[in-house]
Length: 188
Image (cartoon, rainbow, N blue to C red):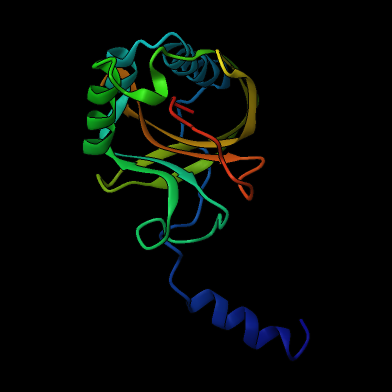
């Protein structure tokens, strides 16, 4: 070890680990099981099965679609969507009334999910470890005003609660996040 490397190595060893750091993939997760869960979540959203879609979420869930600054603190900066569990529920109640202008009538949607990667484990507020996943997506939206193709990358965090898998976190980064976003009245 060189003279300059020794002090750096010693100081790194004494630093506290980053609690937000991504750890290894937690035991018991199978990529095929994860893919099936993500496909189901997408299908429920595409088919406007709002009750079943909402039931996927944990009580401490976060659903975030950042705007043009992907690293900004969503609690202090504008986001396209930044919902906690209560806001997710409120959003679903609004959509189910049929009086939400942006989705009356609802968009016809189909999404493709690909490049699913198990990224690692991330500590959660319950003292456990959530599985963090990355995946690419394309959503085809058809409305009377025309068709739109949305694309991007989603980061998910899944948690086992008993014998169920639940969605604790979903961050959707649109490919064109730095441009003006037309009405985004559906679930991404």
